[in-house]
Image (cartoon, one colour):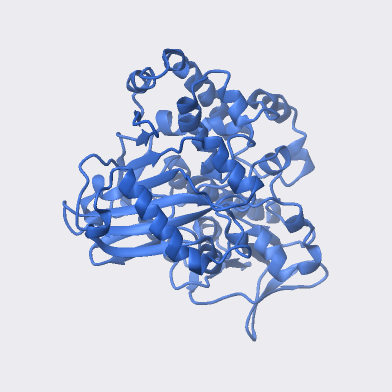
Length: 487
């Protein structure tokens, strides 16, 4: 029986483990933390549940396909519910744009400040759908680590249809001209840790993914998807070892033959790294760090977990407060690489739709996130933990969360340094490499290490990219590649 070792129990690693175990492989998962999930972790404190990661699910079919491959139904493991209200977007002058799958409703909201933009929204959404369908059929459904894949004639023909040399912001300007519209739709680039002013137009597909295919919550929190995948993996015989950190990847004749855990050797026919590929090279193969030196990291984040004994009646599941100058925020993040003085603030209040994640209906579990530079060595994050928290609470107060300090029963702060230490995220970057250039958007680090046979990467830092469903897909694709190439 073929032996597989997987470093890390994030969604990519869990997906690989499930598919391989279902095909009869002997799979062992080694996780440095005490729970699975990777960047998707949880906190359960005094009746408050927080998901440290995505608070909703898109592209639900990418999770379902992993279970279907094993003859299982994901609905037997987790309970999804649609989030119909979408996101409440708020601008500095008091303008509000409730965003949902209701096209006419969105047009009416945009028409408050631009009839032109409102009229063009359906055409934008239609082209966004075309982008998604091309991506799903050509890029997201296969690995791109062989030259035959990259030179496929159909792929190349479709590739030009997604405007690969046009920035997302410039593509948006084809439809819209008001800064509010450009900001609220430009924000989709941050879903992959990038700037709308530099990332390519393909990320416009996010609009259709949310408005067309729908957004879902999971009863009990999105961490339930981690527990569901862990349960299925264990049912298939996967062995998990927690609080177990790999200290070395063993190689012989440029081939991975296993890993070391302190003095213990764990041999394997294939090694799958479900950790940031940049971190793997930096930590285990320091002589091959050209991958690291040439790569711009994605955004990181500074987050507050707030348990409040109060409910703000105006809040929805998601809300975003935009600054007066959205472009300036990304200049600070990627050019100046500085902490933002006027940040976009995102708040998830999952208790709005799911009372099981709060102590009672008049309590709130707020996950507050602002973009941060992925520069863990350039800042004293311990000092900023206090000072920037004070600043953000002031910002929340100014944006309508009145007397918020009086209601706080639980407060936890997550910095880029915390993200790096807990998950191995390179420089604290959430998505590995940014997609701020043609090369980094379309030629991410390959899933199979070029220099080391038998070493594979899954997760957001490699193909096909970041985001929980895409990461889950990467795990499946790598597992199927191992199975097919050994057949």
